[in-house]
Length: 547
Image (cartoon, rainbow, N blue to C red; front, top):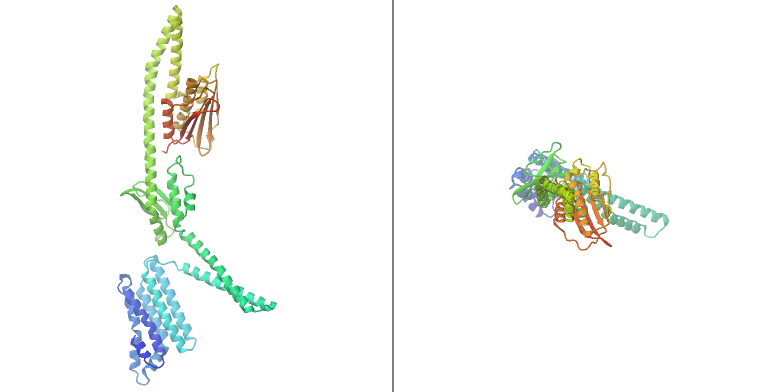
C-alpha cells in the first residue's frame, strides 16, 4: 500500500495510485486464506499478488529519465493487463486440480469472476480515459478479491446454472419492462397524450413490480423440482397419511414415510427396509442411512442417487433431519409386526387346544353318549315308560349339541375350502319346522385375494355362534344370515333374529369370537335389534392379521 499512500500526498491522485489500491484487496484476502489447509497455497499467491505494486514502484524508481510517478503510470499502462493475466494464471495454478463436485464448482466460480475482472479491465482500457480505466481496475480487483474469498471459504456452493437462472430472470424482467415502457411512450406520443415520457416510465416500473413475484415463483418452482421443498406442510402430511387407520397394514406406514422423505428432499426414489442388516440393491446407485433407536439399528433408509458423488447438501440436511422421525416409525412398525406374529402364535396354540378338546369329545364323550342312547332305546323298546322316553329325547338333544360343538371347534365342512357350501350345510343343520333360517352369500371375486384359512374358520364360527345363541336364548321364528364382501378387502357377516332380544351379555363363545376378530384385525359387535331380536355384526380383513 506504500505507492497508494505516496500518491495521496500529491496534489492530484495519479492513475498509478488508483490501480495500486486495487491490489491491496488481494492482501486482505490472503490473510483469510493462508491459515486454512485447503487454501494455504492460494493464500500465498494472493499475498504475492498484493506485493505487485511495490515491485512495479521499485522498477519505476530506478528509471532516471522520468519522474517516478510518470514512470509508474507508464509501466501500468504498458504491462497492467499482462500483470493481471499472469496473476490470474498463478491463481489458477494454486487452485489445483478439482477432486470432487464442490471443487469443480469452486473452479467454475473462480473462472467466472476471473473473466469478469479481465473483461472489466479490458472494457475500461477501451474507453481511452486513464482515470476511468484505473478506477475500473481498482473496483474490479476489490470485487474479485471479495468474490473469490467467499467462494473459497464457504463449504457449499450452488451450481453455476442457478445464479444464471436468477440473472436470466432479472434480465428478462428488465427487458420486458423496458419494452413495455418504450411501447407506452411511443403510443403516448402517437396519440398526443401529455407527458408520454412519464407514462412510459410509469408502465415500465409497474411492469417490473408485477414481474418480480412471477420471477420468484419461477425460481422457487425450479428449486423445489430439483431439490424438493425442504419442508413438510400440514397439507403434505395429511395427503401422505390419508388412508392410515387402526385396521390398516402397519407396513403401509413404511411406504408412506418413504414418500414423505422423497417429497421433502427431492429424491426420485426412497425405500425403507426393516432389520439390522444392510440391504442389497441390485440395480442403481443407492445411499443407505441407518435407522437407529436407543442404540439399536431397526432398519435402513435408502435413497437412489442421481449423481455418483451423492445428493446435494440441502438434500442431505433434509434427510438427516427426518431420520429420527423415520427411525421411530420403523420401530413402531417393527413392534406392530412382532405383536401380530405373537397374536398369530396365540391363535395357533388355541387351535391346537381346540383340536385336543375335539379329540377328547369325539373319542370320549361321543361314544359314551352313543352307548347310553342305544341302551335307553333298547330299554324303551322292552318297557316303554315316560321317564325312559324323556331320557331318550334328552340324550338325542345332547348328541345334537355335541355335534354342533365339534363342528364349531374344527369345521370339517371347510376342508374342501368352499365357505359358501359349508355355511349352507351349517344353516340346514339348524333348520326345523317351527323356525326359518335363511342364508345369503355373495361369490368371492376372482380378481381379489383369496380368503385365508383363519378368516374362513372365523366366519364359519361367527355364523354358528350367532345362530346357536339366537336359538338358545331368543326363541325366534326367523333367523337371517348375510355374508358379503365389502370395500377395501373386508368380509362382513350379519346374523339377525326376531326373538325376544333384550340386553346381550357376552358369554364364553362370544368373548372367544371377539378376541379372535381382534387378533385378525377386525371387530365384532352384538346389540339388540329393532323392533325385536338380536343383531350380530362381524367385520374381518380378507388377509387376516399381518404375516
